[in-house]
Image (cartoon, rainbow, N blue to C red; front, side, top):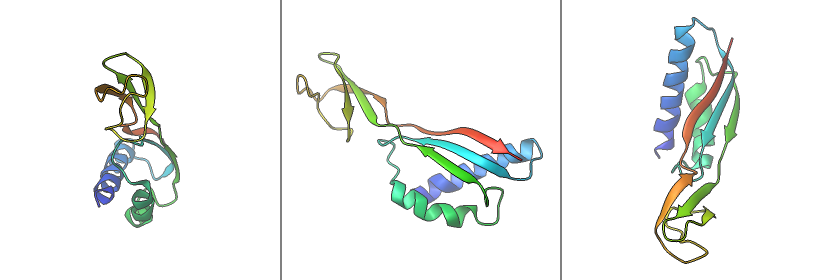
Length: 113
């Protein structure tokens, strides 16, 4: 379950940002975790409470945006939504594509007290 390492990395980064400005706690945390990022969201939400217990994120309101997967066909340049990274173009059935959205794993905003 790599979601534990994802969450612990987020906690570490946020803690560093809080320490930089000598903050006390985090009021709100905004994340962007794309549907193609490889993060299993049910596992993410399962480990989240254990990882934030007793640190600057203890009472944080968490907001997670989950962008859909989107690709552009290399053959016909059609843009289309995908659920899995190996989905083919619905227009020409080509398996060759550039994934243009859905792999995000970002800390978008931290509101520190």
